[in-house]
Image (cartoon, rainbow, N blue to C red; front, side, top):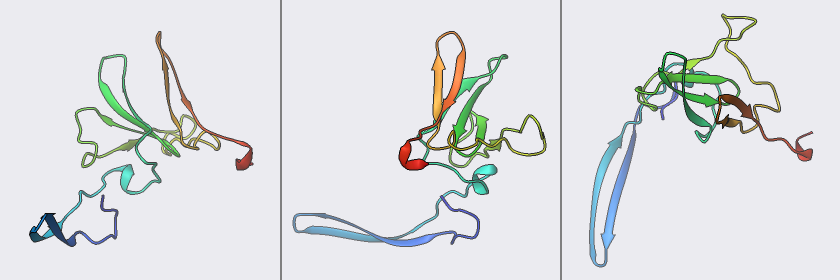
Length: 126
């Protein structure tokens, strides 16, 4: 994905070979630009994304890294804007997961409604 300030496209030569037959083509690759908080806040590798729904049944794509992000499930995960969950104590600021909870966080969902976010931590991280 293209972050703000990065070149908008890359020129590449793609080559396909099979035995003695080979073909090449020059191509301009234009990745999608990140939108919303995904363009300005630190994120992880995407393994920490899950789906959830609120009380009225609206489905959301959720992500955890140094904060909690969300977007409607119907949005494109690459080109759709992501939004930052607000801090409960400072609603104008994004919610931040404190260390060590933000070390490779992921979702925990238990049948019956219990939901949590876990983080990894070990002695080498002290």
